[in-house]
Length: 393
Image (tube, one colour):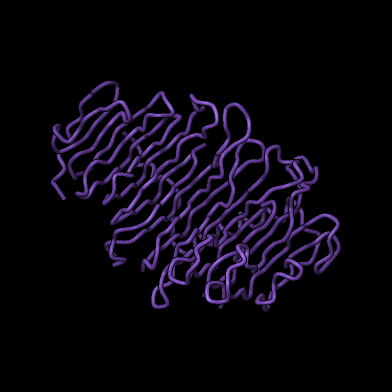
């Protein structure tokens, strides 16, 4: 990495810090284009859905530290291929789209990257993070880590009604990559002020038998249709997904454990694709109620293991659910108690040793889950979101 010289310059209203001014460019599609490795900070704001705040145009290591990013479009664009990117202690604010039939931009999109560390960032009304394919070797230095971020209201809504299927984090076609770690993230979505599909969606993506793709100790609250009282919804907290036709390209070797998933319509955690996926010791709690006490009609089941894409036994096999704690209200159903559907009927044969919380499951029950997760965070010596002393520009 190039040495960093913290020279403060005001350029087009943005506060910049970089080791070489030749590394910085502006372009119609980005407020700032980074063409050389180094550490960068500052405030960058775009005004168009078609303009990113920052575009990475180098394969040299780039660190974005303490940045503030605002705009209706993509905040960090690392789609050129080969990006070696660390994003730490940055704030990202999605704004109203300037184009119809388009959601607010993602906080970060990286295609064919070689290294991604996204940690202790704050996301507000963005379309989350997308990792599409991977060029890195899967070593500890060339893998994907998304850790200790704080997100509020993942928002796929269009300005003219309707919306896109977005996630806090989606991995798409990331095949056989070792050392992936998705942990200690806190995601809170508010009904009617957000639109998220699966908060964490693992689509045709995999770790390995030796080094599973780890999803652990995350707190996920909220996944609702729009409006929240609509009768149908297909999202969830965490889901393995994908229509790949071979064992090598489907979602596989995912281990999800010690996650807390609260107040999600449709489902809490699903294994809907792939092989050798193992979900265990998670907590899935849904009261089936909005904050004002009215019912959510689109809740379905706490968890399920099902062949969502009807693939052959050579693609969908070897999946397990074990020792999860569930209290999932689904009005009118009875599994195992009235108005409950903890385990999806006829879709949970591999679900064993489930602990069914006694009723009633209430809004207070949900609130206690958040408090309990925060206590785990402190016990583990973890900190989520911005480090205030580093976030000041």
